[in-house]
Amino acid sequence: MNKIIAPSLLSADLAFLYSEIEMLNGSEADWVHLDIMDSSFVSNISFGFMFTKYVKKYAYKPIDIHLMILEPERYIEQLRDCGADHVHVHYEACIHLNRTVFSIKEHGMKVGVAINPHTPVFLLQEIIKYLDFVLLMSVNPGFGGQKFINQTYKKLEETKDLILKKDSSALIEVDGGINLENAYSLFKNGADILVAGTAIFSNSNPKKIIHKMKELT
Ligand code: DX5
Ligand code: ZN
Image 1 (cartoon, rainbow, N blue to C red):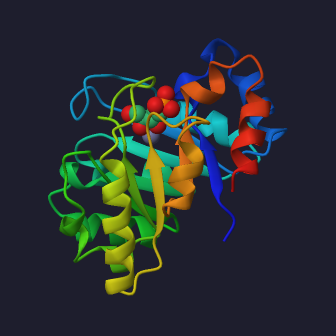
Image 2: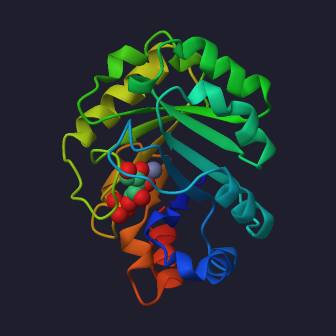
Image 3: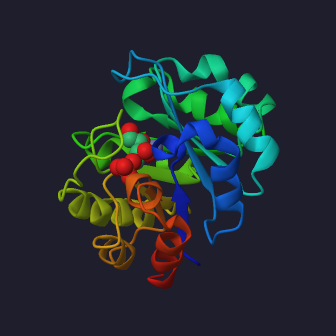
Protein backbone atom coordinates (compact mmCIF):
# COMPACT_ATOMS: atom_id res chain seq x y z
CA MET A 1 0.00 0.00 0.00
CA ASN A 2 1.16 3.52 -0.73
CA LYS A 3 2.09 5.47 2.34
CA ILE A 4 -0.10 8.43 3.20
CA ILE A 5 0.74 12.00 4.24
CA ALA A 6 -1.96 13.88 6.13
CA PRO A 7 -1.04 17.52 6.80
CA SER A 8 -2.65 18.95 9.94
CA LEU A 9 -4.31 22.32 9.38
CA LEU A 10 -3.78 23.14 13.07
CA SER A 11 -0.44 24.68 12.15
CA ALA A 12 -1.70 26.50 9.05
CA ASP A 13 -2.23 30.26 8.87
CA LEU A 14 -5.99 30.19 9.35
CA ALA A 15 -6.38 33.79 8.25
CA PHE A 16 -5.57 32.36 4.82
CA LEU A 17 -7.55 29.15 5.11
CA TYR A 18 -8.64 29.06 1.47
CA SER A 19 -5.12 29.47 0.12
CA GLU A 20 -3.80 26.86 2.56
CA ILE A 21 -6.45 24.44 1.26
CA GLU A 22 -5.57 25.33 -2.33
CA MET A 23 -1.93 24.65 -1.51
CA LEU A 24 -2.90 21.19 -0.21
CA ASN A 25 -5.08 20.57 -3.28
CA GLY A 26 -2.10 21.29 -5.51
CA SER A 27 0.29 19.22 -3.41
CA GLU A 28 0.99 15.51 -3.09
CA ALA A 29 -0.79 15.42 0.30
CA ASP A 30 -3.23 12.52 0.46
CA TRP A 31 -5.61 13.68 3.18
CA VAL A 32 -6.42 16.79 5.22
CA HIS A 33 -6.13 16.20 8.98
CA LEU A 34 -8.37 18.33 11.25
CA ASP A 35 -7.78 18.46 15.01
CA ILE A 36 -11.03 19.21 16.84
CA MET A 37 -10.60 20.08 20.54
CA ASP A 38 -13.05 20.88 23.32
CA SER A 39 -10.91 22.41 26.11
CA SER A 40 -11.87 19.49 28.37
CA PHE A 41 -10.16 16.43 26.95
CA VAL A 42 -7.22 18.67 26.09
CA SER A 43 -6.47 22.13 27.39
CA ASN A 44 -6.95 23.86 24.08
CA ILE A 45 -9.74 24.86 21.71
CA SER A 46 -9.23 24.73 17.96
CA PHE A 47 -12.13 24.62 15.54
CA GLY A 48 -15.34 22.70 15.01
CA PHE A 49 -18.09 21.65 12.65
CA MET A 50 -18.57 24.87 10.73
CA PHE A 51 -14.85 24.99 10.01
CA THR A 52 -14.95 21.35 8.89
CA LYS A 53 -17.82 22.10 6.53
CA TYR A 54 -15.86 24.84 4.77
CA VAL A 55 -12.71 22.78 4.55
CA LYS A 56 -14.77 20.00 2.98
CA LYS A 57 -16.30 22.46 0.53
CA TYR A 58 -12.93 23.44 -0.94
CA ALA A 59 -10.60 20.49 -0.29
CA TYR A 60 -10.40 17.76 -2.92
CA LYS A 61 -8.95 15.25 -0.48
CA PRO A 62 -10.46 13.04 2.24
CA ILE A 63 -11.06 14.82 5.55
CA ASP A 64 -9.44 12.99 8.45
CA ILE A 65 -10.93 14.19 11.73
CA HIS A 66 -9.06 13.71 15.00
CA LEU A 67 -11.50 14.33 17.85
CA MET A 68 -9.78 15.43 21.04
CA ILE A 69 -13.09 15.77 22.84
CA LEU A 70 -15.02 14.05 25.60
CA GLU A 71 -18.21 12.15 24.69
CA PRO A 72 -17.49 12.16 20.93
CA GLU A 73 -20.53 9.94 20.40
CA ARG A 74 -22.70 13.05 20.75
CA TYR A 75 -21.40 14.50 17.49
CA ILE A 76 -21.28 11.64 14.99
CA GLU A 77 -24.28 12.76 12.96
CA GLN A 78 -23.01 16.32 12.79
CA LEU A 79 -19.62 15.11 11.63
CA ARG A 80 -21.21 13.05 8.89
CA ASP A 81 -23.28 16.05 7.81
CA CYS A 82 -20.30 18.36 7.56
CA GLY A 83 -18.38 15.95 5.36
CA ALA A 84 -16.01 13.98 7.57
CA ASP A 85 -14.55 10.98 5.76
CA HIS A 86 -12.61 9.47 8.67
CA VAL A 87 -13.27 9.99 12.37
CA HIS A 88 -10.76 9.16 15.11
CA VAL A 89 -11.98 9.08 18.69
CA HIS A 90 -9.69 8.78 21.69
CA TYR A 91 -9.71 5.53 23.65
CA GLU A 92 -9.37 7.62 26.81
CA ALA A 93 -12.48 9.67 25.98
CA CYS A 94 -14.98 6.87 25.29
CA ILE A 95 -16.81 4.91 27.96
CA HIS A 96 -18.67 2.80 25.39
CA LEU A 97 -16.01 2.57 22.72
CA ASN A 98 -17.52 -0.41 20.90
CA ARG A 99 -20.85 1.39 20.45
CA THR A 100 -19.13 4.60 19.33
CA VAL A 101 -16.97 2.77 16.78
CA PHE A 102 -19.96 1.01 15.27
CA SER A 103 -22.02 4.17 15.21
CA ILE A 104 -19.32 5.96 13.19
CA LYS A 105 -19.26 3.05 10.71
CA GLU A 106 -23.05 3.00 10.49
CA HIS A 107 -22.95 6.68 9.59
CA GLY A 108 -20.81 5.78 6.58
CA MET A 109 -17.44 7.03 7.81
CA LYS A 110 -14.19 5.21 8.38
CA VAL A 111 -13.17 4.92 11.99
CA GLY A 112 -9.96 5.10 13.98
CA VAL A 113 -9.13 4.92 17.66
CA ALA A 114 -6.40 7.23 18.95
CA ILE A 115 -4.30 6.40 21.98
CA ASN A 116 -2.27 8.83 24.07
CA PRO A 117 1.45 8.22 24.58
CA HIS A 118 0.85 6.65 28.01
CA THR A 119 -1.95 4.32 26.89
CA PRO A 120 -0.79 0.75 26.21
CA VAL A 121 -1.53 -0.79 22.83
CA PHE A 122 -2.93 -4.04 24.31
CA LEU A 123 -6.03 -2.10 25.46
CA LEU A 124 -7.13 -2.15 21.82
CA GLN A 125 -7.23 -5.94 21.67
CA GLU A 126 -11.04 -6.24 21.70
CA ILE A 127 -11.69 -3.41 19.23
CA ILE A 128 -8.83 -3.49 16.73
CA LYS A 129 -10.57 -6.00 14.47
CA TYR A 130 -13.30 -3.44 13.74
CA LEU A 131 -11.06 -0.46 13.07
CA ASP A 132 -9.92 1.14 9.84
CA PHE A 133 -7.13 2.97 11.69
CA VAL A 134 -5.17 3.01 14.89
CA LEU A 135 -3.90 6.52 15.62
CA LEU A 136 -0.76 6.48 17.74
CA MET A 137 -0.17 9.82 19.41
CA SER A 138 3.53 10.57 19.38
CA VAL A 139 3.05 13.74 21.48
CA ASN A 140 0.56 14.51 24.23
CA PRO A 141 -2.46 15.79 22.33
CA GLY A 142 -3.63 19.39 22.27
CA PHE A 143 -0.90 21.39 20.60
CA GLY A 144 1.23 21.44 17.49
CA GLY A 145 4.96 21.95 17.54
CA GLN A 146 5.87 19.45 20.27
CA LYS A 147 8.77 17.05 20.38
CA PHE A 148 8.28 13.51 19.08
CA ILE A 149 8.19 10.86 21.82
CA ASN A 150 10.59 8.05 20.93
CA GLN A 151 8.66 5.36 22.77
CA THR A 152 6.28 5.51 19.78
CA TYR A 153 8.59 3.14 17.89
CA LYS A 154 7.95 0.42 20.45
CA LYS A 155 4.22 1.06 20.25
CA LEU A 156 4.37 0.83 16.46
CA GLU A 157 5.89 -2.62 16.80
CA GLU A 158 3.23 -3.66 19.33
CA THR A 159 0.44 -2.32 17.11
CA LYS A 160 1.71 -4.26 14.10
CA ASP A 161 1.81 -7.44 16.22
CA LEU A 162 -1.70 -6.88 17.55
CA ILE A 163 -3.05 -6.25 14.03
CA LEU A 164 -1.58 -9.57 12.88
CA LYS A 165 -2.70 -11.46 15.95
CA LYS A 166 -6.27 -10.20 15.73
CA ASP A 167 -6.46 -10.47 11.94
CA SER A 168 -7.26 -6.77 11.68
CA SER A 169 -6.88 -4.68 8.54
CA ALA A 170 -6.35 -1.44 10.45
CA LEU A 171 -3.79 1.00 9.10
CA ILE A 172 -1.42 2.67 11.53
CA GLU A 173 -1.40 6.46 11.68
CA VAL A 174 1.16 8.38 13.73
CA ASP A 175 0.54 11.96 14.83
CA GLY A 176 2.77 14.55 16.48
CA GLY A 177 6.31 15.85 16.13
CA ILE A 178 6.79 14.34 12.68
CA ASN A 179 9.32 15.88 10.33
CA LEU A 180 11.67 14.99 7.50
CA GLU A 181 14.15 13.54 10.00
CA ASN A 182 11.89 10.90 11.53
CA ALA A 183 9.37 10.26 8.71
CA TYR A 184 11.50 7.66 6.94
CA SER A 185 12.12 5.53 10.02
CA LEU A 186 8.45 5.72 10.98
CA PHE A 187 7.41 4.46 7.57
CA LYS A 188 10.09 1.81 7.69
CA ASN A 189 8.91 0.65 11.10
CA GLY A 190 5.33 0.15 9.98
CA ALA A 191 3.51 3.48 9.95
CA ASP A 192 1.06 3.69 7.05
CA ILE A 193 -0.03 7.29 7.57
CA LEU A 194 1.91 10.24 8.96
CA VAL A 195 0.27 13.43 10.22
CA ALA A 196 2.47 16.52 10.18
CA GLY A 197 1.60 20.10 11.05
CA THR A 198 4.53 22.31 11.99
CA ALA A 199 7.04 20.61 9.70
CA ILE A 200 4.83 21.40 6.72
CA PHE A 201 3.14 24.71 7.47
CA SER A 202 6.03 26.49 9.15
CA ASN A 203 8.16 25.96 6.07
CA SER A 204 8.22 28.62 3.37
CA ASN A 205 7.71 25.87 0.77
CA PRO A 206 5.16 23.46 2.27
CA LYS A 207 4.56 21.66 -1.04
CA LYS A 208 8.24 20.79 -1.18
CA ILE A 209 8.16 19.30 2.34
CA ILE A 210 5.12 17.21 1.41
CA HIS A 211 6.90 16.10 -1.77
CA LYS A 212 10.00 15.13 0.20
CA MET A 213 7.90 13.18 2.69
CA LYS A 214 6.18 11.34 -0.15
CA GLU A 215 9.55 10.54 -1.70
CA LEU A 216 10.44 8.62 1.45
CA THR A 217 7.55 6.23 0.97
C1 DX5 B 1 -1.76 17.41 18.30
C2 DX5 B 1 -2.47 17.13 17.01
C3 DX5 B 1 -1.59 17.03 15.83
C4 DX5 B 1 -0.79 18.27 15.54
C5 DX5 B 1 0.49 17.82 14.93
O1 DX5 B 1 -2.66 17.32 19.33
O2 DX5 B 1 -3.18 15.93 17.09
O3 DX5 B 1 -2.32 16.63 14.68
O4 DX5 B 1 -1.41 19.18 14.70
O5 DX5 B 1 1.28 18.93 14.83
P1 DX5 B 1 2.85 18.83 14.79
O6 DX5 B 1 3.20 18.14 13.50
O7 DX5 B 1 3.27 20.25 14.83
O8 DX5 B 1 3.29 18.04 15.97
ZN1 ZN C 1 -4.12 15.18 15.17
